[in-house]
Amino acid sequence: MQYPINEIFYSLQGEANFAGLPSVFIRLQGCNVGCAFCDTKHTWELNPDTEQSVIKLVAKQNQHTDNWAYFSHEELLTEIKKYSACRHVVFTGGEPAMYDLAAITNELHSLGYTTQIETSGTEKLLISDNTWVTLSPKVDMPGHKVVLADNVSRANEIKMPVGKMADIDKLKILLSTHQIKTKLVWLQPLSCKENPTKLCIEQALLNNWRVSVQIHKFVNIH
Ligand code: SF4
Image (cartoon, rainbow, N blue to C red; front, side):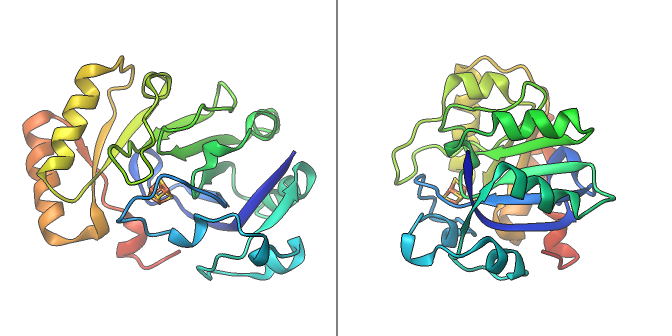
C-alpha cells in the first residue's frame, strides 16, 4: 500500500475530545467534497505535477503547499516513530478515508499507539476497529458527496463545522435520521469568528452539545 501524503507534523490536537493531546498528524492528499470554507484546499488534487520524493516532502515543514509524496507503510512508520514521546496518531486531510488505512492503523495499535481519523464521512471507512472516528459531516457540498449512514453510526464523536444557523439545522436532521451511538456532539465555529462562536455557544447550551474552539489557532501553532 502506498499512501499519498501532503505533510506529517507533530503538534497538539486542537479540536474536540483529544484537544491538548500531543499527536502526530498524517495529512493525506486528495479530497472531492469541495467545501467552500475548506482551509486545506491545497490538499484537494492528487496532481502528478506536484508529486515529490519522500525526502523532499519530509523536509517541507509547516508549509501549506500542494506538494505530496507516496509513502510506503514502512516509510510512514519510520516518520511516526521519529516523534518518540508521542503515542497518538491522527489521520487527516484532505479526506483520509479515500484510502485503505486498515493495515497502518492496526499496526500502530499493536505498537501501543492510539489512532484517530478526521473524516467528512463520505467514504467507506477502512480502518482499525480501535481507531477513534471524528466525523465532521459535510452535507450539501459542491462535490455532491453523501455522508454514509454506517459512518454516522460508527462515529466516536460528531464535530459539526458551524458558520450559520443552517448548519445547526443540517446537524439536527442528521442526528434525527441516523443511528447515533456517540453522545459526543461538538459544534465548531468556522475560523473562530465572533458570530459563529456566539451561535455555537448558544446552540450548545440549548441542546446540551459541546463547543470545540480549535485551540491551535488561539495559541498560534500548526
Ligand atoms: S472534506 Fe475537509 S478537506 Fe475536503 S473540502 Fe471539506 S473541509 Fe476541505
